[in-house]
Image 1 (cartoon, rainbow, N blue to C red):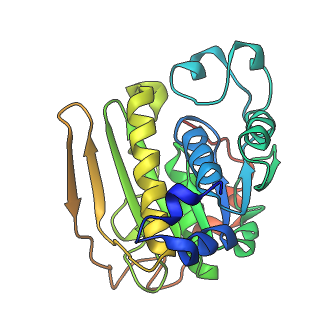
Image 2 (cartoon, helix red, strand yellow):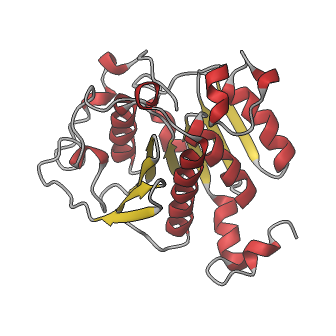
Length: 252
C-alpha cells in the first residue's frame, strides 16, 4: 500500500518498484543536494541507502539543507539524517558513517549498485569518477551554484565519464563563494534521483542537463566519450592514489 501511488504509474508498476527496492544506493554528502537526495530515495522506496559525510550542521546550512533544524546545530549531518529517515520510512535499510570520502576508502563504491555525488568539491568528484570507472559502478553527478545546476548519469564503459569533459581541480568555485538557494538544490537533486530511477528501470538518459531555475529552463547537452580520456579510456586512476587521501571536501 505504501507505494501504491507509484505502482499505478505505467512506467514503474510493481516490477519497477521491486527493482527500486532492490537497489543499493551510496550517497556521498548529506548537505544541500545530499539531504534532498536521501529524502527522495527513502520516499521512493530504495531498499538500501548508505550515507557518507564527516561534516557537522552549521547555522549557514539551514537555508538550503532539508531535514535539519536549529536543535541539530553541531550534530553530524549523516547521523541526524539517519534518524530522520528512519521516521520517514522504516522499511528502508539506511546506514551512515561520519567519515570523509577520499582515496583511502574509495573501494566502498563496489558494494553498491549506484552512487550519488552530492559533494561540492571537484577533487572528490574525480575520486568518485575514478573509483566508479574502476569497479564499473554507475553514478549520478550533480552540481549547484546560485540558481544554476547540472546533472549527468555516468555509466562506465557506456557514457562519457566526468573526466572526459572536466579539467583538474582548482578551477570551479564552491558554494561558499558563489552562494546557493534551497529551491535550486531541491530541483537539481530531484532531477538527479529521477535520472537514476529512469536508469534503474531501463531508460538511460546520457545527456548533461543544464538547469537554470532563474529563467525556468533545462538544456540537454550531448557529451561524447573522449577516446584519450585519462580515466575511462586510459584507466589512469590517479585520484585513487595516496596523495588524495585525508583531503577536506566541502559538502554543499
